[in-house]
Length: 527
Image (tube, rainbow, N blue to C red; front, side, top):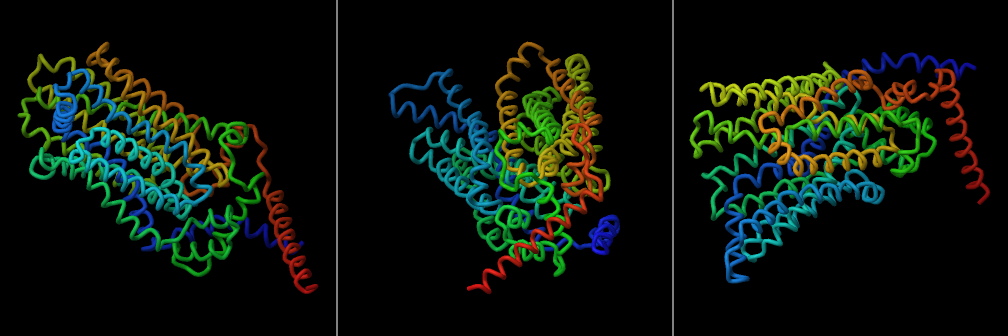
């Protein structure tokens, strides 16, 4: 009974332990894992979103020259359009395949091992894309884009999982935003390197793609010296000593018993410690609304209209009177705003919380898309209206990066316990890439039919997303994975265990563990 009382007292003092954890300094090991993990993953994804814009004309010209050399006649306009469309859109197909392969690779290589293995795809893609012109093979460019898509599909699933598992809960959101910040920084870097003075020239465009190998090589140089996810080591590899060492390095302290016990508590609460399949996840009623929330949030992430905004940017700038030769420099402002908003979001997310930032971001996007629709309809009649349209575009981008741009990936890691996390990221990744592909496929038709009213479609998506998050999503800031699971218990119609029941689980687990140790000792003595 005294033992039970002591454990109950420990349970009641969780608030005090939270305060103590908040005093922990962020270690160089944790920052290195976040930065270099994101550099070889999220940065490459963001870079590939923007890198194809600057050399578009040169690549199409390369397709034409290659066609003439092969077939003795110029390529038709329809054929070059098809080839270019395939080159751009196959990136999303590769991303979908990468997301589908995540659970299998994670099971074999773990979190850190998968990130390191993924760099192979980045290096191979960089070689194919950079050498395609010299080899006079546009097929190499298409295959390279597909492979770098696979790299991105894996990266966007594994990195948020790794960051969420290595980070103390009081800074999990801030560290998780490294994913979003490095995506935006990648977009901005692609825009900068694509300037005519740098690599955006006919004689240098292949170096734009060769650059892909640099962040991958940097990650390969640093990440092997950083620890694996301690949660993965303890719960899936049963390596308690390795998990303890990993926690010590990431947290910068020797006594990590509290963190180890938190992971043990999560393990005790799970029916199955083995990695669950997608089918098991879909069938489990205890995680039904977590899954619906992630699917909804990830769909809104892609369908909210940010990708479509780029279709209008250059046209609006030209309407405002900017010369074509200075457009690349002005569009740098979009990448700069993206990066700045993502950094600010990372700084405030632990104070404001995930839910308010998501709701604010989607609501603000709905408002600015509505204003943009108004401004576009008056653009030809009022000379200064294009400037307001461009301000709205910047505001939409800033609103997106303030919350919706990165938090969906953080939530995917937070809403699911260890055994369901790989399957959850696979489903989230599949929704992400299918939605991305749908926008690229359908938006030109929507734009053709609705013209300047096309953005009203995204107003509806953003508004519905905000309403869903307001009524369904609990705040996950500074909560353990167990606490977050309990937050969904009522809506999932799952009974919540009382503290005394939880303590019974604790004691039964400890007695079972001690029994196993004693049995092992008896066996050793018998030998």
